[in-house]
Image 1: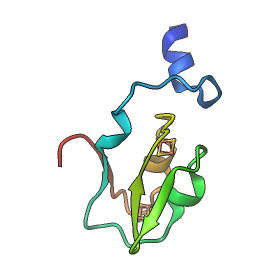
Image 2: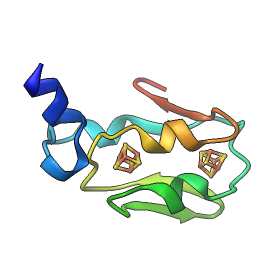
Image 3: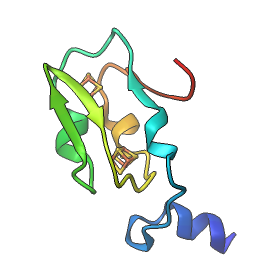
Image 4: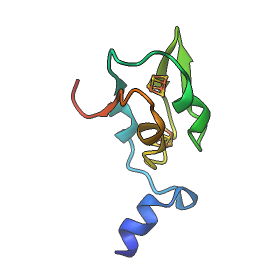
Length: 77
Ligand code: SF4
Ligand code: SF4
């Protein structure tokens, strides 16, 4: 359990390299920027009105939680 707790704790900064590359926004994204503003690692950029995930991602899942359009997905497009 402590491994899971550490993984979910942004302060621990436990990351698996490359995991952040699987984030994307669906067509439901309206470019509100909430994910950009709430990302604790500050690595989401808004590019032409769409979020663009970079590194380092803490895998905290905050972006997916705050998206009012439920537009953030993780995995294969
Ligand atoms: S999971 Fe989302 S909110 Fe959390 S660090 Fe990564 S991009 Fe930012
Ligand atoms: S919070 Fe959701 S709708 Fe807003 S910019 Fe991010 S992905 Fe798009």
